Image (cartoon, rainbow, N blue to C red; front, side, top):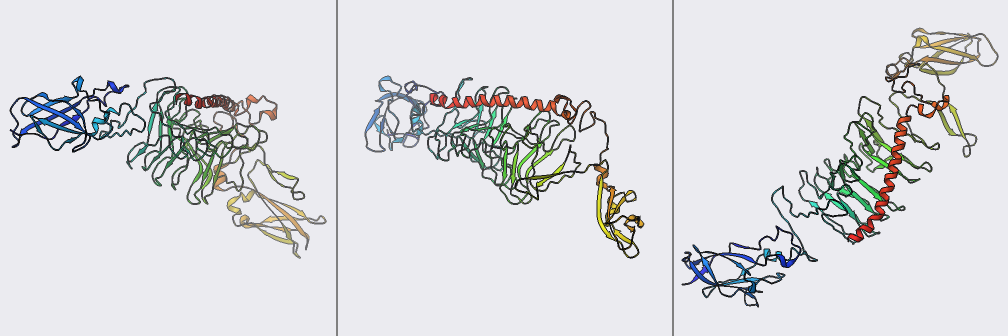
Length: 604
């Protein structure tokens, strides 16, 4: 009777992907083979013992015999049988599975045709060794599983879940791509639970060329080029840590190619009380390099956006620091020449924070705590909004401890829509008699009143009279009934006087016929704006006074009081101490980074 075997139901190597085995020989070298034996009419053969032989060839027809099981007695029930090929020690499957193989089955002398080609699972022997050049592909359909997962259980030391390195000047240490164009997805997501570890550490060893410690890209309109999360709440940890030793490279470079939607070139989040959402350090001391470089081509996006959601404490949306004598704590540039763009945009909701705070710690040289530049015809070089309606907060706060520096420097027109208070004031220009070598300073005139001044000259007629008309807005702008007129005769003294016209629209001067006289009008402002913004001439210090608390002075040194009685002394001291701690921390980080190449070389 002629038998045939229907299509193979299962051809697998068990446990290959369930266990990470360090030695090739420890993997069970057997193949589970299942088949169904029927007659030519498709009717299962009778139950019993049948003689079956299995032979592996290197070709679909002809070719070389590579392995032979010999004739084996196999139990068949309802036409179904199972066998483990290679289970007999003398006939173990010791093939390398590094090329295509075909299986031929002989049952009771009836050779089945055609031969069965062994599937890819048979080559999983090679997967445990991951020999050089091995390609690993993973695919899953469940959103809770990983296509490829690598775990390093060490909680301390320079341990890596996965280590990738590229020595090519145009290559990538690791490339991650999230193909979905919608939803919350990540090109790569990494987590470190070690208090001294990194969620992501990328190192490009080439010192020249355009190379990246890590480069990630997301095409989603609501995704992130790279998302790093450092879950440890203590210690020095980083959501993303990038380092570049190239004089023209980037510590971290992130790019989102979508030109619309809310997207980020780099987005970092950190839960540690002393860590960083994003930390970038460019160690090269020369050349044009950036600790962090952010760019957005979207007309409504941000090159760099910082967000401090804590509503209390001294928090910063963006914190920038430069120790260079000619560098910038924060440098922002909006290259779009149209639209409402911002070189730097800071927003703060804390009652004691800053929308933008920049510190340039070098006490000499030309340096800036914050420097912003905008080429847009309707943009802002620096724009700050303090949205909290209570507490002492500043849209923009500028402070300098250097005697040669400036708390704020403006080139061009300055517009103040609120009240403006100052200790003193003057204009400073190039001296008109010696503009190359001298400066000329004139101080402002001060008054307890909100005065406006008008002046001019008048020619008296043959009757000794002259009429002076005031501007049409004079009555709406000033307390015209209280306006005063000062007259000064030109030439020899003579008797003179004046009389205001009806509705105080002007005045008539009386004096000697055909003489000339100079006049000045002083008036107090009385318009709606001054009523809203005017402040009393004298006001008591105290907790309800936003300018100064009781017992504090705006200028303690001028009155011979100690420095600690200054209005902002405690705040300045806190900032000074914090800056010293920050400098010490930066020195510690610099030492760590100097050790990193040696550690990488040892680990490599």
